[in-house]
Image (tube, rainbow over all chains, first blue to last red; front, side, top):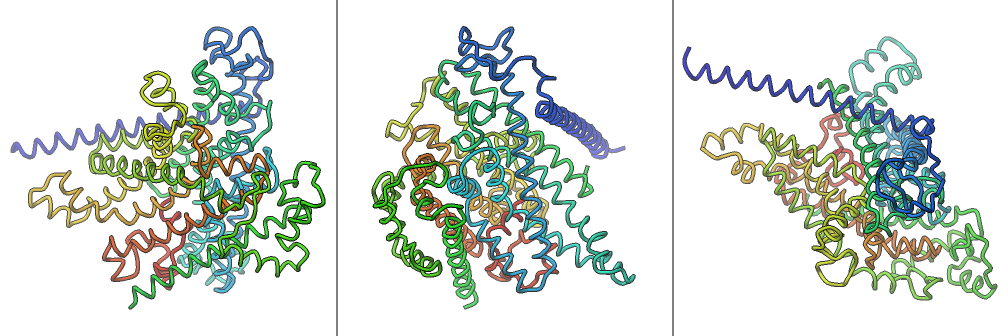
Length: 290
Length: 343
């Protein structure tokens, strides 16, 4: 065996080993993200399971106490437990994230199907309207809606949901066009299946599946936008614990107690990372990679 | 000739989109379930005492006694003249308020865009085609893209202003106080740009012409800079235009966080004081700039990529759409479509 061949074989083996490690790390990462997501959903549904403390109880003797026994993540500017507020805050943030994505997904799918399946005139009108919606920067559009219709969790959810619609319209339309011209749809038409059967049984599931993946990734973006709106004072009203408004309060006490600002932000980041990683993993699965 | 036609057509589409955005805001104001005069005065939600004189002024200024369609065209006519109405809190024309606040926001946006471009270009060139650096970089990108802008601002404040005492925490008017806000805005944008750039660089590095360049003895870095970068230009520019929109929303957050003056702060303050004419003014101005930037991005494709000039298509066009939608030329490619390509 010549030296070159041996060297090549060694590189190949190293390559395999490297690939193995990457896959292991990716699997581990996915598992961690799934655990994080389950914990957040638990916190949103049954916060009492994760903490026995009251998120609204203010201990005036312990204002801005650093992390330590009793208060693992410290206390905020009026002596409330930061950990308990993060746990209870999951509900507002998740309701907003899921709610907004469902709104975008629902209307985006309907409009996208209309744009993909109807005649040229209706399709063009739908797309031009979508363009107008997309011409507004998303967060700016959400702020406009909130300015006109008032703040609060419900309006913020609807505002972010509406701002996200144009993106889903485009994706669903693209998928519909792709699926519509594929051979299996042609085949099912050729078999004499009715229009509604082809639409409901074959076209819709295939066109919508990639969109579900995008919605999973979009969950993180919607949660970020929601936190941004509460940070600007347009989301849930106080004293409801909410990640964005916790940060907004803590902003004035940054030099006195960094923990009150750092940990709620860490919660948002962890949540968004988890949804993004799981979404990408789903996407890879769907596209036949990994 | 064909290029001129394409440019004109693209500009036309942008104008129609802008008109549509103005129309949408006009009718949105009428959707509020109260008397439009009350809505304009910001009394849509709260019960505020408004004197009949003020109401009469608003009714006259917005021609609220005319039919809706007449109001609409009067509104468009005023927009064309740059008249955005009066602020009822600051008692000044909205256009004057906008002009007064535009400077700091433009400076912030330019600084952030420049930083994002530098970070992403350096990062992309250094990590593309290299396994371990790519891997580390994509981890950092994931974290930065998942971080709330305002939280990132906190962390930067804590590190550079509170712990290291290297930079001022709040706006002091000099250039040094621009660094932290610009970095806060730039990092998430840089992360997204870097993701797109490295992916297209990696794709380009697989091409046969790269192999021939390598065969001539060029190293990875030289090949990336001299040959692959040009191929990554179109998706990169697309992402740049797209992230500019996030920048406008991000300016509202960053300016509030760092107590800087600017359009974003004006927007947030006006929402709080329910100064609806100002809110609409800032939103329309921001949207106009966003449309303009995306139009320029679209028009630049032909400059950076000769293939677009030849065929009217970009290399990033999703292949799935080609068969079904062949009549769609590049000039017609619009904002959402490009977002789709990016995703």
